[in-house]
Structure formats: structure tokens, C-alpha cells
Length: 196
Image (cartoon, rainbow, N blue to C red; front, side, top):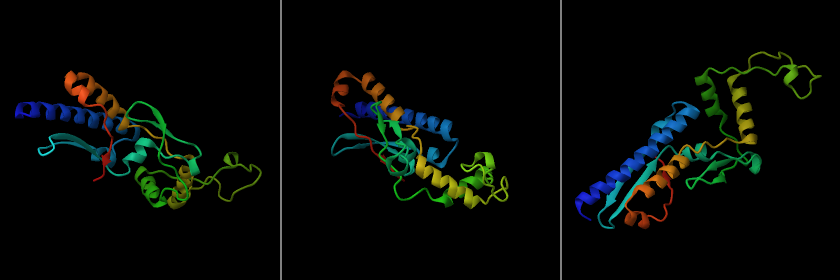
């Protein structure tokens, strides 16, 4: 492959990768606000001279796949779905079984957000006849974090398809816009994300 064709192709793949990264960050920021995960998303286009293969690799923090796909609730109950890169709605590969999210991380999130929990008032409890001493009073952040972690384990986490959906859409556009000869050569792509 001559240098001019190589530059054109790597530029085309870089443009594809940049669009995927920008759209992924946009979807994630809309859903979660500015996060370390969003800041970590990046892409790298490389060319291997010996195999003459152009590779596009995407990187993000390792928990990005959980945010993208979601996590089904306790033992597969409350199954969560997400949109894969082919545009299909599929069930998440992940589920909570014996462990719940670490309350210590949730406690830090509670402190960062300035959230304060309270003891349940009578009208919000299952047994409405009983009384709880100090109902309505603030509770410790650790207690609130544990309650949230337990709820997440049971209900799961919704997936937001922040990466797979834009990847699939941009990949389809890329294939449609490439020269017909090159489009025939790109029959499929295997999606792998790499952690930092």
C-alpha cells in the first residue's frame, strides 16, 4: 500500500474513531454528568507494517462495560438490556449474585453529592402501624450507602449503551461511505474495549 493511500485510510479510520469517542462522551455526559469514565474514553488508530493491518482500538476505565450494558438484579431477576453495536436489544452479560456494590464507594459518592438520608416516616414503611424512634431524622452516610447498595443489588443498574450504540451507527456509516472494494473487505468487526 502506498503512503498516500495509507494516510487516507488511517485518516478515515481516525475520523470514525473520533466520532465514536465524541458521541460516547456526549451520551455519557447527558446521562451521568462529567465523570472520570467520560474523560477516560479515547481511541487509537495504528498500522502494522508486517501484517499491513490498520487497527482501531478504544480505551476507557474498566467499569465502562458495566455502565454501557447495565447489570441485572439479584440472580438475574430484573434483567437489564442494552443496545449492542449491531442495533439489537440484548440482555446484559452481567448480573449481581452474591455481592452488592461496595458501600464505601457509594458513601463517597453520597458525600460528593451532598445527599442526606433520613429514617423512614410511617407513611413510607411497609408496616404502617409501627413507629420508629426518630422517624424523619438524618441517618449516617454509611447507613444510607448500605441501603443504596442493597437496593442496587436487588434492582440492578440500567444500561445506557453510551458506547455500543454510537459505535454501531458510526461503523455502519463508515462502511456505507467507503469505496465499494474496501466495503466488501470489511465484512464484520469484533468489538473489544481495553482498560487503561
